[in-house]
Image (cartoon, rainbow, N blue to C red):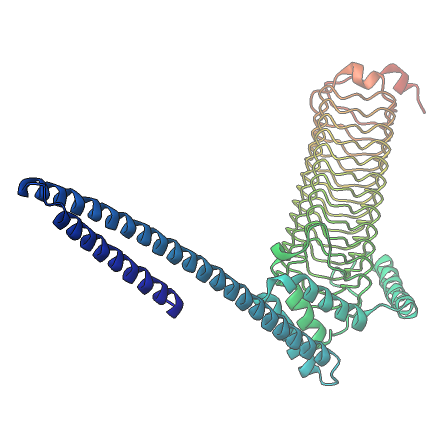
Length: 489
């Protein structure tokens, strides 16, 4: 309590004591001056006077106590305001110190990013990562700084890009010519890749192991047109990144997260994407020649016009993917799930699709010449105008499939299930349908010259009658050759 407050209280106490003493004195003199009253009356008046004095004194005490309590409450309120102001000042000072520390660490790390020694640059990148972890509000800014560092140091120049493409194209043309000559494509072939710089690898590592929950909503980290061939991105988090036009040839992307990533026109030649998650990714026009995409998830991905020549896609999931005009020549798609995928006008020449799931897949105008579809599920698939010359379709399920105007010249359909399939105007010239199930199949105007239907199941005379065959067509023993066939030359 302050000295002023103590002095005020002392004055109040002295004043109260004086008043009480004067009251007693006045009462004493008043009683002594009244002579005519009896002793008993004087005592009664004295008691009343003392009671009155006590009440007055008590009232004064209550007033003093109330005044004192109010003064204490006011003092406490002022103390609380002062303490609050001190806390605010402390917080402001802490923030100023923190901002100063961030600025110092920022400036130091950024200055070192341009250092001539690669070790110093790598250390600066790790320092920036630590800042992003210690101060989450700076996370996005630091990630943008690191992506800018990668872009500036790995930018694909137009001339260099053209030179790389010409070199790769010449190399691929040479391999293609060798493949054509030997008819034995080397699936291990891939263009040479370069070794990535250490500081660039460090920056990519920091970017791809960031806490993506701190990324800004509806914004993507920009790594467009970067040359990061041979990068180690094992199980990296590349979700939603903008990688358009980037070169990731030979990169290790096993198990990485590329959900929703934009890889439009990117180069992923001979890259390893084993068990990578590319769900909903944009790979329009991307180059995935000889890439390893075994067990990769490409559900709903956009691969329109993508080049997947010689790619390994065993057990990959392409459900609902867009592969319009994609090049899958010599690709390995065994056990792959292509259910509901769009493969219109796609090139699947020589592709391996053994036991693949192509249920309800759109293959209109697709080129499947020389492909292997043994045991594949093509139930309800649309193969109208598709090219299937010399295609292997052993024991495949083509029930309810549409093969209108499809070209199956010399195709091998031994044991295939063609029940309720639509084969209007299809070309089955010299095709092998031995043991195939043709129950309810529509064979209207189907070309069966030289076709082998020995042992075919559930084939009825009315089906053969509307088909186009001749004496070279081999029918089951239980089916009589139509009269108009006998008359054919």
